[in-house]
Each structure stands twice: as C-alpha cells, then as structure tokens.
Length: 337
Image (cartoon, rainbow, N blue to C red; front, side, top):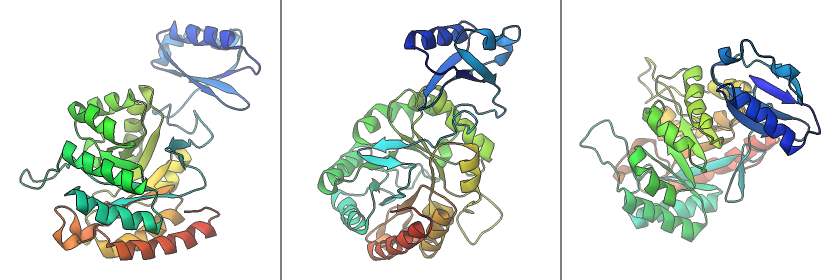
C-alpha cells in the first residue's frame, strides 16, 4: 500500500511514520517528491488488518496498490524514473543507444566496434564477457580478461559500458568493471541473482525472459527493487512464438504497456528480437516510435567471423546509417538521440 504523508513534515515526523509501518513487520520504502512524500508499505498487508494508519499523526491517506508488483508500479510512483550514469540521464527526453559486439573476443575487436559506434552517436558500449550459450561447446566468453578489454575501450572512447552478469559468484568482479549490470533473458527468474543485484548501488538492465508475461517480467524487477536498488532498466528482447522466420518475435506492444504499468525506463533489443541483421534497423526505428527510451544493438566489424550472434550484428557503416534515421524519428516525437 501507499502511505501519503501530509505536506511540511519534519524528518523526525517522517521517521516516526516509517517506524510505525515497520513495527507491523512491513518494509517501508520512502519516496520524496517535490510536492508529496509517500511511503510504500511492502509485505503482507493482512498484518495491518486491525490497524488504522490514516489516524496516525502525519498521515494524509492510505491507498492500496492493486498490482502484485509494488515498487516498480506506476501506482507507487507516477513520475518516470530517471537513472543517471556517468552524466547520462536514462528515461528522460534523450534516447540512448547502447551498441557493440555480442561477445568480447579481443582487445582490438572491441575497439573496432567501440570507436565507430561512438563516432556514430552511441552513448554506451555493450559487450559480453560472460556468455550464456545454448550449447556447452559454444564460446562462453573471456571472463575477467574480456572485462578488462571493455574497460580499456571505455578509456579510449569515454563510453560507459554495460555487460552481463550470469552468476552471483561473479558479481563482485563484474561490478568493479561495468557501469550498468545486465541480467539476460535466461536469468530473468534467477531469483538469487536478482536479490543480490538488488543490494547493489549500480544500475541494472533486466531483459524479459523468452516466455515471460509482462506481469512475470515486472515481478522480476520487483525482486531487485525490493532489496533497495531502484535503478532498473527494462528491456524487451523478443519472446518465443511459433514463428520460424525470426529468432524471436519482438513484442513491441510491450513498450507502451510497460510504460503504462511501470515508471521504469524501457529499452528494445532488435538484434536478439529478430536474429537477423536486415531486420535490426526497421525494428529499431519501430521501437523508438513505440516509445522506447533506448536501444541495445549488436555491432561487429566482421560479423562473418564473430564467435557469437554474427547473423544479427550490424557492420559499423550500417549502424551509422541507422543512427541518422533514428534521429529523424526521435525529432518527430519531440525527443533526441
């Protein structure tokens, strides 16, 4: 439930309300806005069955949250969440493009993608050092060595990096290198990983699972938020359907739905969403038109030699052309890239 406080309360008075909520065995999540301060009371609301919070000093009203996800719900927070990363604001007017290779293969290979995507207008560098692969015999990534190559590319280009973490045991090392943690589709319901990431003060991109409903997706985000980390970016990356022409079916209807249901920024990954480089550009443009706050795009200088996902990777020249088209769509929507 949401506890709306009366305006003008002191910090001591707010603290007393928080203590009161926690005395019932609930967790209190404070959100201070320009006009109102609210407290999200999270937990088993049956504990309050015989209590009247509205009569407590400083409380203006108490509102129920009807959705099973609370903290990430638009009911809990009306304003869009803005996440700051190295001076970049995610979730605002500016649309951000995170681009780079699917897998980190070598120091030079990362730079061959990082430099041209920066020149084309990308604001973040993506790249995988730990790779979840369907086959145990496929390239699994370079681990910490790959993270060091990403860090070197960041020094050269100034682009903040986003990379995936697969296992709670790797969290410390990935945390040291990356600017944004990524949780992939296969780990969307790895609740131990979600819980551990929720304890960190670092932005997290959460990808939708291959067969996940919108509600399941948002409940996974709730796991992270409930541990204290509200810096969550949602990413639609395609779901499994009966269609065989594409790797996945990119569910662009998820973008406006998520924007309605949640205050969190929403990105689209047209590379995994289609699995085909020739479909990346049209679906990227459609994603922005649908209201996405950003894109995650795979770029490789020699996709025919890529150790993973070459068929869905754009060459730098194609990416540069796409960026020019994206700017036109963004401007038509009153936004910018």
